[in-house]
Image (cartoon, rainbow, N blue to C red; front, top):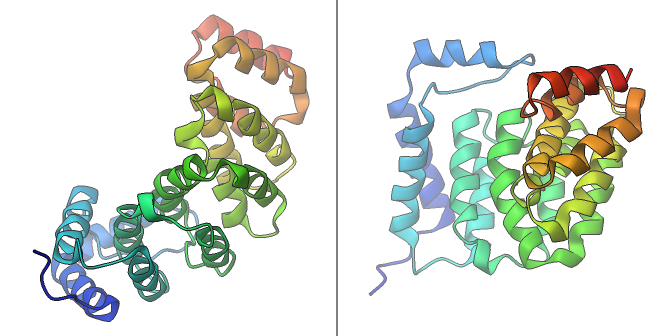
Length: 246
């Protein structure tokens, strides 16, 4: 039997208290080397963050709806530390079977407001949650594709990352390549790297299609994107693609 329901405010307060207790100032200072922009962190290892999120989820399992998980994100995502955002995202992802269509606008709003304001926060949230959302509501693929043209860099990165777990599925490959092509003009290394990651994942499904796509777009592809995209090709093939796209 489910226990007494705990409020999103209670879980958020508990999460922040536990994160502060787990924090390591030395590790927190070291986190910055992975980011070009300034970030804040408690300095907690990823497995420990996931363990805390799981523990908190178990304390509300069977009593919460997806709306409560969204409310928790509204409380945790504005916190500056990476780990706070991650806990909110990980708990919300546990409710992916219940995601409503309205979640799309909510997530876009979080991204556009810079509440997921690092590559790490975007990736933790979108690779799992938005991939699950698109699987449940494939009609919204067109909406995510339009994110590639948004003025906000995190929305643009999310356009690519949201398809990462879907890139090896035939029914999503056309959308993956459309998103990738739409992002080629973006002069932002964090977007370019995510786009290369997306293409690399698509290449796992059909390497020949990826090669043809890259050669077809040639010099329009940022070199950062290209290098990420071809990582899994043999060395001779990589060299040929690099030469063929100059």
